[in-house]
Image (cartoon, rainbow, N blue to C red; front, side, top):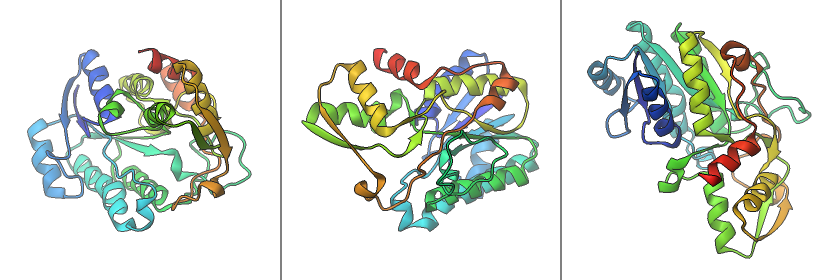
Length: 284
């Protein structure tokens, strides 16, 4: 299959491109310099050149706090960008995979069980709203679509400037004597390598739709950091704090764990738990 990955130099883009190429697909990658999804003519120019059967959009505006003060920028990239892609793909009978976020949830403060695809979303930030709008555009406009909700991505490309929580904690754990880390936000950090494996298997099924895809299990950012330091052999004092104490500009979901059983049923693939994924990442 001819596949074009938009955002091919990002954490997910790099791992996904490599995984799909390893499956024998003809994969082309597009960077922000080569395509601007906010611009319909830029999309047409770039995709005319690559002529894909499937487009995978990993590009996004991910500055969650900054989005509160410039929501129009987040909306342009995370909502109107996918809309432009969906329109082009619909017109040319191309399948589209849109990468979304667990941040489409968060409004239900009493939630204790993983969200399934049929559960009602409820974003609590401008970023979350923009990602949800992008989902709706893709699902409404492009019949051959995959919409993938995932969470807390980390991958090897994060070492070269894109950043992720795991790499940030590894750096701060070596630079500082003590760290204060949020302990009341429950989620599932996800390895881009494991996510890429799951998505490659999903693409092979051609079963379109909405999917939750993360590593298994749940944790808090504090518990993740403690596990990370133990695996890496870093000694640093850690203090659990609340979301209110951290006082970020944007609100975050207190619980955004995703139930991935639908993916497992379709692909017959059980993605590793988050502890195993984290250890594999550190060891490698």
